[in-house]
Amino acid sequence: MKVLISGAFWHGSLEESYARAFETIGWKVTRFDWEQISRAHPLSQMAFADKILRYSIADRTGKWLTSAIEDTKPDLVFVIKGSRVAPETLMNAKKILGNRLLVNFNPDSPWDEANKTKRIVESIPVYDAHFTWNKQLTDSFIQAGAKSLHYLPFAYDSVLHQSLRMEESEVKYDAVFVGTYSEERDKLLGTLESCDIRIVGNGWLKSKHVRREWISPKALYGENAVRIMALGACSINILRPQNIASHNMRTFEIPASARAMLTTRSEEQSNFFEEGKEMECFDGPEELLEKILLFKNSKHHKVIVSDNGYQRVRGETYEKRARTMLELIGFPA
Image (cartoon, rainbow, N blue to C red; front, side, top):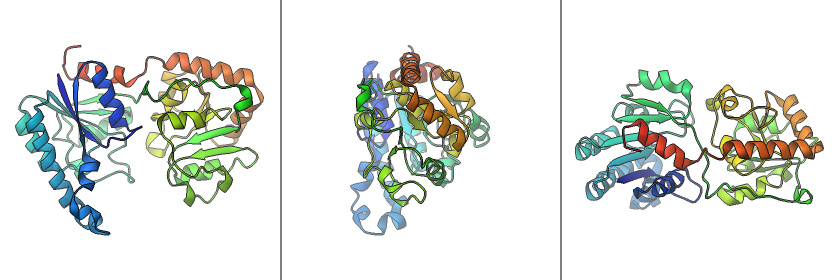
């Protein structure tokens, strides 16, 4: 069986994790790197052209996508996010595919202001099926015209997120946060002045609340992110507003790396992990500080939570998610 996956492929990307997952279960994978192909367009090299002509570039990239579908004849086309893919491109893809399926997984909410595009919303009715990590988005997808919708949580990549056992003497920080900057995260972490925190992620140089010495000079992914998380007594996971009551990628990646997870309290995460045993949770800055100090001052509790979380998460891989996806859309197991 063959699948064409469209998205952005780099070491640590969700697209690459899913590509490896499909290969692991025996599928032949064609990687259509939408971002790289778009950047190869001559106009994209002009200083202001991407903002002005981004949809013209995207439409050209869409033609290359449909050509790739026609050439490779996949049994399934899997678009991850697809924020610039035009509905017309998808309709042309459907003509080529016939009764073969065109499906989408968006790792963000299509209605989140930071990630919303006109094309992403208008394309929803064209796909044969959508997969969402957030059950709360169900009504929105249905109202937008989704033909079929399935819940599919995030997971961890067993190639990237592995247990990295370290001696206690190697722990350098009270807590580590690995994630992209946001104003909400900045304000929350800025309340931890009495702690020694390490922050790694994109955009943090514009922060106004956290100490400059806490910030790593560059973002880290995959194994490198695991190594930095291992230097903290715990690893903080702060859910963004679009993830509140749900979960995010770090929900699985932290325990899969055998780190003690301290995360925003949410109903959905509690369905995966037991609070106080497999993770610790917080609702605000006071509880966040309290739990950081708990991990800092109790090595035993840190080990218990990290070990239990690691054992609980073991089966939640992207290989499992790929199999679930195929089962839900009718492919034989």
